[in-house]
Image (cartoon, rainbow, N blue to C red; front, side, top):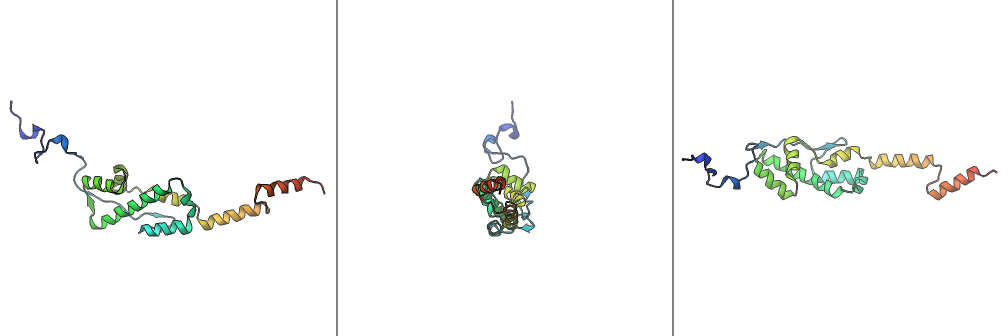
Amino acid sequence: MEFDQADSGRLEDNTPSHQKVRDGRGDQREISMAYPSAVGTEFHSFKHLRETIEERYPGLKSHPEFTKLIEDAESYLKILEMKTTNPSITPEELRSFSRELGLSRNKAEGWIHYQKLPQIYRYLGQAISLEQGSKYYERIINSLNGAVTFEDMEQKLQQFFTPN
């Protein structure tokens, strides 16, 4: 019984086929990423994102996963910078690049090929700015008629129900 070269279980470079990972998604794929935007601002750098959060949305830093969210945003922008020098990426490059940045391959692939964005941009869109939060705070304080603490509120309620 004869086996031809294709059935030998070896690839062209004589490496056993079970030792090479075959992606099945083709060779190079175009990087289809764009600069992220949220709250009417397009972010071209990580520094710009950090400044926006510091100045206008400081409450976002109290999110329990803020560190991870901001790291993902930084990684996203690093990948986007890579696009300027290399507009396409092979599956192997994607795998090694995602390992280098400490990302799951699925997350990096979603960003690179499917135009998904890191979650921090969604949270930015939902966040209340410092300016707007201050307005809400003032309205609430004014509606309490000077009762800022629980004790103040108790005292006002006691005076309210006490006959003069």
